[in-house]
Image (cartoon, rainbow, N blue to C red; front, side, top):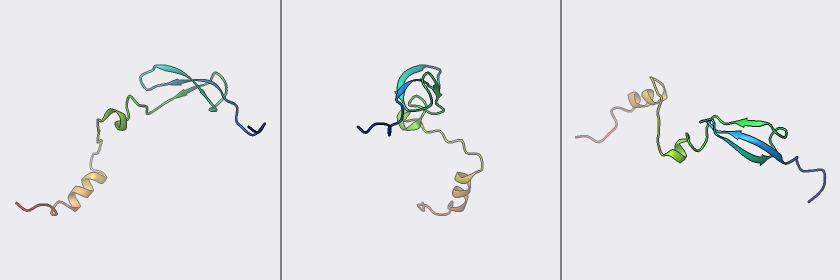
Length: 74
């Protein structure tokens, strides 16, 4: 590897959404700093398989209203 072109690689603490802490090595921040996650594998739908839709009169409601007449006729 070439010298003086790579960022410093050091130990940090990653704090998950439930409060658990994981020691990791990263180029983020400075040594000993902590990285607090808003979304992680314990809460993200891609890993949990649980889809939540917090929609109250927004884009989904607008779509459903606009295309309500399109569908399979009974």
